[in-house]
Structures are given as C-alpha cells and as structure tokens.
Image (tube, rainbow, N blue to C red):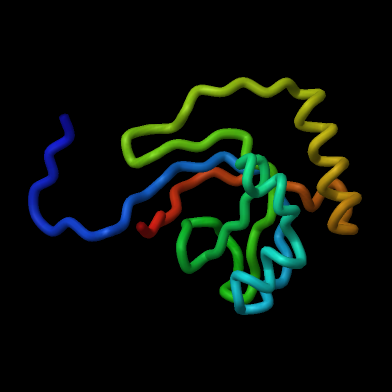
Amino acid sequence: MKIRCGFVSNSSTSSFVVLGVVLKSHGEIDKDYEEYVDQKEYESGECILLYPSSSDVPVKPDECVVGYKVSGGDDIGINSNAIGFNDIIEISEKLAKRFNVEKEKVVLYTGTRLDWF
C-alpha cells in the first residue's frame, strides 16, 4: 500500500524512455497531435508527444519531442522492457524518414512527465 503524507494533488508522474525527434510546436496540443501523431500509434501507446512544460525533456519552450515509446512507467518505477539494437536502428530510420530529419537528429530521451487526471 502506498501512503502519501503532506499535499496531494490530482497529478502523478510517469517515467519515459522515448526514441524521438525535436519538432516545432504549434502551441496547441491538438494541432501538434493532428500533424505529428498517427491515431492508431497513439492509442496503442507506441507514439508519444512530450512538452517541456509537462516533462523534463530538454527542448525549448516552442518545441516538442515526437517519438516511439520504448518504455514507460508510473510514479513507482519504470516498466521492464527489452529492445534490440537493430530495432532501435530501424525505428530511428523510420522516424527520420517520417519527419524529414537526418538520422543523427533521432535521440533517446529519458525522464519523467506529469500526468493529469
């Protein structure tokens, strides 16, 4: 059982490991999702969109990270997962092609983000 002492809000954090690219944000999450994220990928949890205002991802305020969710977790810890090096290369190539960036621009991001509920 988890016991919290002190202030408790309606938010939680989750950990992430994302292979992604930095893109210009439109300033509205709905517009970014519409342009950058495929609905099926989002619903399956494969694709993720991260903002500096709600995560510790190191990008400028007018940018976001779009990518493939390698692993994630809740405020207790990160889920176990394994991904092969060849899979990482393949995903990197797909991201680079999809978003028209050089392969070197695809980066592995790790950190935490706020989840509001």
